[in-house]
Image (tube, rainbow, N blue to C red; front, top):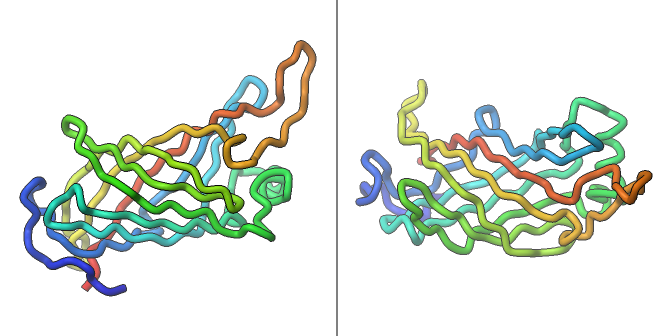
Length: 189
């Protein structure tokens, strides 16, 4: 990856330098939680790539992530296969989910990361509440950054509307999906 910024310090966060940071897939988790009957099902995606381009002015920074939908993992192969099917992600015909940021806005000590989320060819706006966790140097001498993020979406808005009606008008699967991010990214040379 090429660096699209310089390596000069940014003015808002001590130790943070402008540049391109690649997501570290070994230390990053992209996950979700959705209601199933009375419990919550948690899942993650095992294959993804992305970068964060930190600018001298943090508000001009950008992020882009691509997730392989076939890599969904919920600790149940049967459920994972169903999630990959046309009832949910349709991973064979729409293999990728993408996020592209459109704005980064400070909110107190944290940030709101706005962007566009595309699933199954449907693109909708989304906002993540983001907590910046800091700047460190890893064992290989690379500058790394970390943050946690969360957002909630209605899966129906992205055309993921499979469900099973239950007695009393209830549904098997909830519409609300909570997305959670635990991210570590390394500055690229």
